[in-house]
Amino acid sequence: MTHPRPLSPHLSIYRWLITNTLSILHRITGVALCVGTVLLVAWLVTAAYYPAQYLTLQECMGSMLGRLMLVGWTFAFYYHLCNGIRHLFWDMGKGFELGTVNVTGAAVIIATIGLTAFSWVYATQFAYQHADLMGHHMQHSPENIHAMPDEDMPIDSRPMELEMPPSNYDRNVIQ
Amino acid sequence: MSKSDNKQEYQTKLRKAKGLGAAGHGVEHWWVQRVTAVALIPLTIWFVVSLIGAVMFPTPEMVAAWLVSPFNAIALALFVVALFAHAVLGLQVVIEDYIHCEYAKYFMLVSIKFIAYIFAGACLLSIMRLHFIDTGYAF
Image (cartoon, helix red, strand yellow):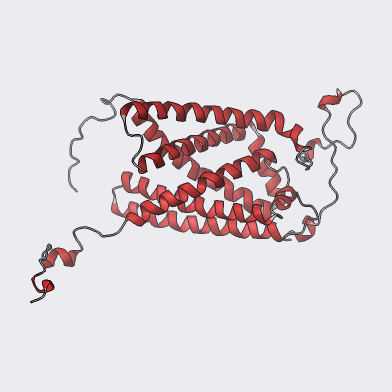
């Protein structure tokens, strides 16, 4: 067993600038997104083969911790996308000047935060209203399906009525 | 006397036998990483927009209805394949950078490749099933 050689100081001495911070953040978000692929697989497999577990998964994703993780993955995704495009420009040989690097780096951060905020605000506030425009109807999770809207609820907050005909899905489920 | 008779050997025979020197390959990794990255730009944007547009698909019937369209099914399949190819190559670089114990490194490298194939296969099979399952609705 060889003795570990002394290391020159690195993290304790070099200043964190936008360049190296964004670089390590690209790697960290990449690994975080790889962890997120587990969720993608779980989502698809339960949707196809285990409908009861799919609804459980949806409820877990809707919990506070689940939403926090989803926001984190959204941020990681948009960051990795924007910085990845910046990397592709570097691969073409463009944009290595010091001023350009700092400007594009700032643009990546602003774009990431903006896209994450926009996506989540749109998904939570506006997507339901647009569901009718897109021609499909939303179904609530089992606990709060209402057969009839309550008379004393204000009209705007009554849940949308379920209008889907019974599906053949259950006949195809693996027993 | 042809040119090949005087060709200089840059490596000693022992070094050649040990496999030392330049590898002569490896740029495929770089290219596949970039090509999958370029493919993933439109695919992931489409995927995120679809998820947000359908607000995460509350029931499996909605996912199946979404995947009835062959465009959605093929796009999702391509997304999954490009995603896992890109992810495995990226993880490979991270593992090679940080793990130096030979056994741990090779174990991790092989296992991420196996896991990627398993996950991609599971996703593709699920996409096919959701595409062919007849729920009676379509988007």
